[in-house]
Amino acid sequence: MDQKEKTQRELQAMEEVKRAKARLAKVRREEKKNLRKEQDHHKFMMGGIIIKYFPDAYEFTELEMNRIIACAFASKDVQNIISAVVRERSCNDINSREDGNEKAEVERP
Image (tube, rainbow, N blue to C red):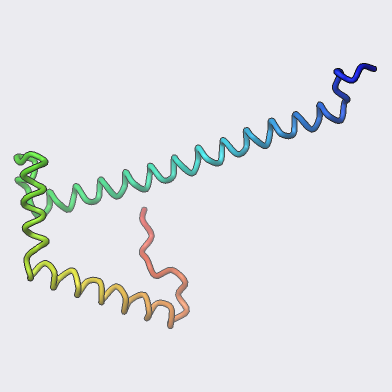
């Protein structure tokens, strides 16, 4: 048998490596798919919120919307509401953990 010829054991090992690479690629594809799905859900939800509270949003360009949103978030009232929501969320997380509830977040459909 020549040294160039691969033994049966080497061929099996190469096949195992091939299958492992394919499994790894599949896992990575699934992770990317799940991430895209989560991001798309978030974009859809955020778009719905914007339209719900600001129905004229589609009439503005991106630059105009950036100016509007930047101004809104700079206002003291909005900063106070954001702080209150973050505090409430923190309290809810603490209460959930104290109650023995492992999931502090609401599951998405």
